[in-house]
Amino acid sequence: MGSLPGILFLIAGLLLSVGIHELGHLIPAKKFGVKVSQYFIGFGPTLWSTTRGGTEYGLKAIPLGGYVQMAGMLAPAKEGVRTHKNGQLTMAEEARRASAEDLKPGEEHQAFWRLRAREKLVVMFGGPLTNLVLAAIFIGVVISGVGLPSLTNQVGAITPCVGQVEECDAEHPPSPAAQSDLQLGDTIVAWGNTPTSNWPELSEAIAAGGTGPITVRVEREGEQTDVVIHPTPMERPVIEDGQIVLDDAGEPVMREVPYAGISPTSERERQPITAVPGYTWDFTLTTGKVLINLPVHLWNTAADLVTGAERDATGVVGIVGIADIAGNITSTQNDNYGAWDRIADLSLLLAGLNMSLFMFNMIPLLPLDGGHILGATIEGTRRTIAKAQGKPVPGPFDTARLLPLSYLVFAGLIMMTVLLVVADIVNPVV
Image (cartoon, rainbow, N blue to C red; front, side, top):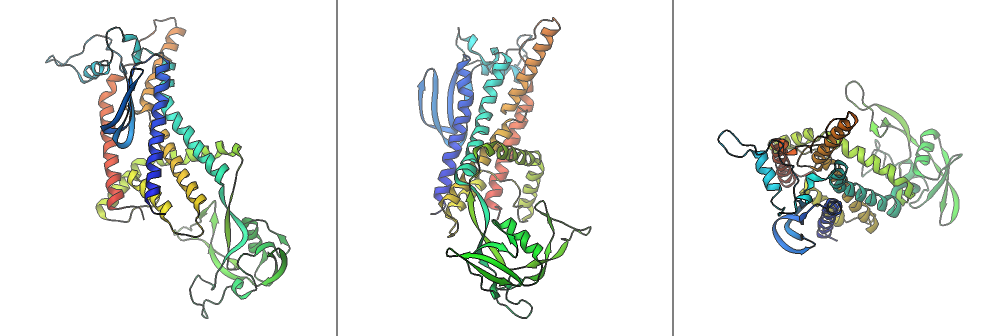
């Protein structure tokens, strides 16, 4: 199939996600009477645009984001014009004036800062919320539409030799399954006296069955027959909660278990739509943990880039790395990896992208949406307290004073983007 379809799918999904995110800001802003002068997907030179209802809609050349330009985002200073000692306008005052440039005489009431606090919350939270909803939709497509991979009790592979070697010898004899009459495609319906309907049940039955000869009931071509298998003891790492248990020296804890030498097939099993919220919540928690550890991941990525060390496969990747993953999904040549598997993995990739956009934008720092949400929350809280105490209602929260911090955050975002792009190209995750 090639990698190009996967990359194009990712770009289309990214543009869709960004476009809907910005609509999440634009629609409520217009509903509340805010003047919205521009709605663009992408950055850089304009490829196409049209003006409708006082708003210019368009596409730009670099498809790495988008924006909605709302007039009057910053409230005027309470004490009037602020200047430095030399008479020059302060950074905050320059930003306030630039924010009001789209407002013509008589349009002052259309400024964003004039909205009530709860309306500001709706406008600013609308964008991230759409990404959360999109993530849930993509997750629903996978778990309720395509289905999640589930290991079955059907024999998908028979290991030829004990120890995973290509040629058997005295130290690595033929595996118990290879020495038996078991065949690929057999469905194991009972291991000894234990009925089995899936791989977890079969795996537990093998572990509990011991290493003596055991009669295995299999279904083959619609008929049931018995096969005798003699499992052999083998040392395997102890696994708890999906993790290998380590001893005090950091070595895996081993135990002797019965070994048969079979591997299961996998089929997709659909989950009810009611399971989507739970999976979405787990997805949110996982993304949140990555976000909390983002500074550590970025430091490790930079260190690996400088030292030439192999990059951590569990670390973060940038847009180039995500495009590479999408390309690999569609270019992988594997008879057991079909179209539905590719659709599911691409959908999960877009779910992760949207969840990351949601979580990242909720960080309470300007210029991110979370910074404006924090400002509206503070404003609303102050007004509620003032009313309860019978005091004059305070004015809007002055977000312009946070601009120095905003510029630092913006510079940090640029540095992070450049670092990840360079790392994805020079030292990609293998």
